[in-house]
Image 1 (tube, helix red, strand yellow):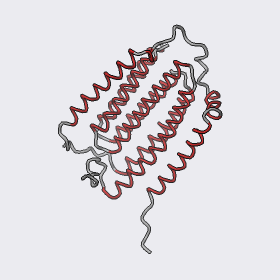
Image 2 (cartoon, chains in turn blue, green):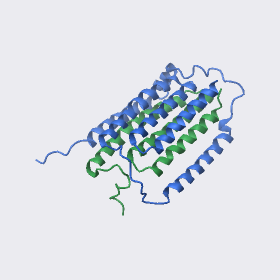
Image 3 (tube, each protein chain N blue to C red):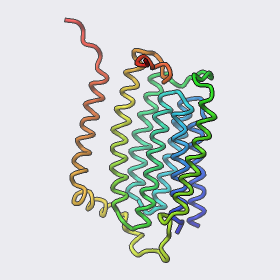
Length: 171
Length: 100
């Protein structure tokens, strides 16, 4: 049952990813990526990470994708781009290298000991991802990265404001 | 339970699809979206391993990756808007004045 859910969600995620890449219209790409983020959120839920499920939906799907859509509308970038390519052989080589990367990662991950399953389901797997546990970890073990992340967000806000200033009128 | 290697294989495929983005597409916004796809693929692998080891640290790391990705998207899109204001194009091949 869980395997069936995983397969359906994985197919939706892959379809969203490929369609985002292939779609000529930038707005369609953004909406397909939104579909992909939703599917990944469901996968987090299947992996016993309810807090990350909510965070993925509210921040990735809810804030970052809305920002992308705003910028696409602002720039009028939904027109399709021209077909000519500066380097003619770029796309076939890209496809070949991507397949090579995929085969390499598949061999490494599936065959190595990283993918080894424990013999039985380990105890505590159902509740280890509860928000309380994440809160405990964030405010005790990971307190310094937590504060630094706050500073990163502050710097990002300042950067965005500075980058979008209009030129000051000449005195 | 679904084996961890299935999730990691899915993460690898999504990462490859995201890695194809900058190679195939020239629209800067689709490029940013491919980078986000790659970040999501990595997050998925982290959460899968967190479940396998029953260790919360993988999920906390994903939390940090998501917040840093949000900051990066904001600054990246601000850069893109600033470039568009002067060059009137979102094609990354056109933005090449520093080329020797």
